[in-house]
Image (cartoon, rainbow, N blue to C red; front, side, top):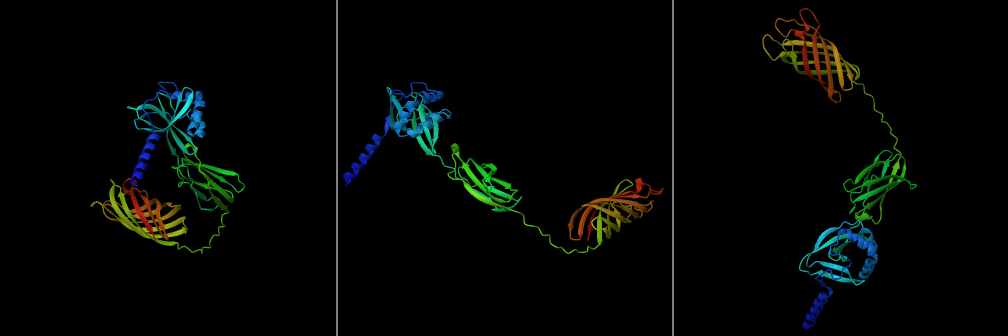
Length: 394
């Protein structure tokens, strides 16, 4: 039994050795006579030696590959490589006289690397890598690799929309795809829209302006213009918008009377001096959200001491709204804010904007200018005031 086992091993080893054909020298039987083959010569081989190429490919069992080879070699990217000792080739074409011959399972067994040209040919989902030694032009097949076919994946959401609503198209799940061509057709088969998507830009949104059913198809394209075996499809139904019934909201009478507090920093003239001020009052809506009457009373405290002193002031204003912005004007009064001065009637102007609103509460910021009603004892340049304030109405 052991003898049979060892005989089997010896037979397999001998068969392997016989199957490999070691080549130690090239150029003796060149397929194309040139000791210094150039990349451009590969195109000449394909044209002038097309018959020999066809004969050789048929001899190797790759007769169905020859036309793709002769066509694609005209534009193939040719790289210069080295065929190193030990490199294997599936087969090699050469000529003896006028006869085209084939060596299979070739191993380059020379002492030194051999300069060669490398290029690839694509056919039927496979990539064929060819090697052509520079010294002889012997066309050789090195490797055959499967090119992964593209597989489309299409997701459409939602599946039913109203006119004008967006439908999201997603092909991000497609595999081995360099681009995806999405087509949209109506129920009659008329093309409505075409989209070109890529792995980097794999989603899109579309809207429809007519009711009906639309078929969305995706065809994925991969390397070497390979197409997905079958397109992916989805159907979207577009319907009329549902009628909008406005709810009956009971009309509540708004309370026209509100309270307010306000305050902030300010400047007193007579060399500008800082102060802090505060007021409280009421606001009455004359025209809701349009025109108000404001009555407020308070006082101010200068940040400096003598001759400056605390004072009282009040306002009676009309407040006009324009959206969140408002402008107010009216009369006010001020007691004296400094020794040697007099109090009196002021003209008051405000400019502000509402910054928040919650139910009946409103918060706003505003600027106020108080100018004395001009009299000899209260000139504008010494008696006006500039105020910056925050107002809270509740």
